[in-house]
Amino acid sequence: MIRDVLLGAMACIGAALFSQVPAFLQQYLQRLGGHLDEARRLREQAPHLLTRIDELRMAHDSLLMAEPLARPFVAVRHLQKDIALRALEFFQPALPLTLEGLMYAGAGMVFAVLVFNLLSLPFRGKGRARQA
Image (cartoon, rainbow, N blue to C red; front, side):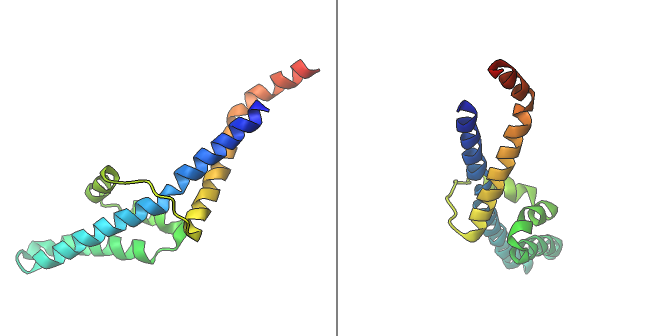
């Protein structure tokens, strides 16, 4: 009984946490696009910004074109740490009701249930021994 309640709680926590991935990536993408727009505007004033513009464009376009389940990996590969930290600083959790958000929530539930089952393995034999 208690195990079932804990398992359900872990599944809900996993779903809630993983469902935030699309929301964070969307907010990160918005900030990345803003930086890209600003760098393009400043390009005419400072030619050394061409490298920065190329970095931002690569990160922006890669993330924008990535498949939903590949986005976290693409984001890590092209991560602009300064922008990601600012996005995280101002990140507000959301309840994404898109197919992508539901897929991440489902993945979070599966992950949390697996973690719970792995962590509870040492305690399973003791409970059965008491029942016998």
